[in-house]
Length: 473
Image (cartoon, rainbow, N blue to C red; front, top):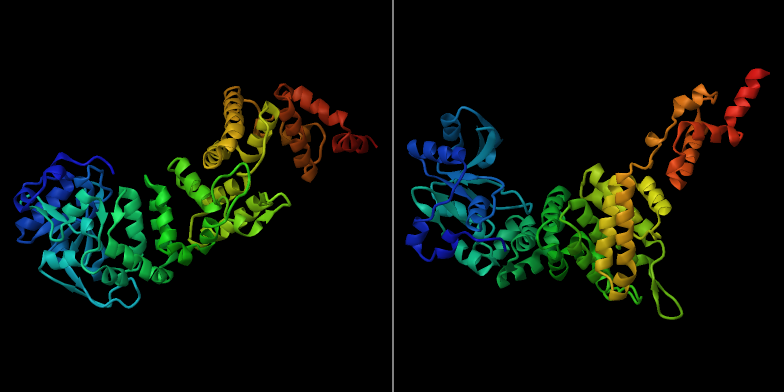
């Protein structure tokens, strides 16, 4: 858990809660003051209060108020009706947007996400009752201090994720809260309270009704959190059985191989923890061995093999990511890294240059991160064998980049215009010839001169010579 503020550590009773002071943006404070001056109650609420008490930097500063949406709009010059049917108006101030939402009571939920009706209320406590977790159901303003009707402070101190009221009711209102419970647990390093955890397990199947886009957002936040290994909770509570059943197979799949000491699933979770908190990298580690679930074989000596799992895993990863509506760039990057992750290589400048040329320098850097994380989640034998090779490869890659050695067609000393000027006709042959010249340069960077490369074209008797002879005829 991140550093807690001194104020947070000293809160014990109602009087001390009233004395709490949270530093908020000047614009947010001004919105509260203007609403208060007009006779309305107003507080910052939810995640910004929680994060401020934990010493974390809030991402958003949401405001709740007794004022109706039309009253809010009448008080501020620049507003946007971002969710007017649910009482939310965005107030634009100092170049930022602040969501201001009227206290409300939600009617019955019929789709596991949206209330059939919304009724406005004048009671802050009634509004807080409909929120998901106690740590997200606290409000604050400078006059009253902290309003904490459900002991969110106590749960923050204990490091607990607990639903407001009856957990099953909160999850039936919005099934995404089931996944959010695990996500908050991972972000904060908290445990899920027993009754809340039981409801997660019982109601996990209802996540099937949630849109893939909303699932993706929670996946992302969990994976790039400080505790990505908490993905295990998705398995233990039955959530992966709904959202990613292929993962469940991996948890019990052995790897009888000197390079491994864990099941595929355990290896996967450890690998996710070993890679930096970059979404594409953590997605790659989560998905890199998924195809082992259907490519496994055992030889006569009892040794496990998973031939072709990288290529098949890349294809599966693409389908999975598209299903969760990931953007094309992330999907393509993860697919490529999954495909390359099991690539064998021998350190040496020639082989490193070729790999960097095939992957591109940017992807190659990620590839090395993936290889290191993959190795760190293997046996000690694997670490002893692979880590020294990785270190050598990283050093060679740094030297290649520092010396600006040619790795791409753009870096070749000759281009298409040079070949045309020398007599070659435009067409597919030109592209093949440039690729052949690049191979010569990857073999020896000293060859990357115009004279040498044009000389190689003639020496090989390519279409260039043929075209010149035809011209003479």
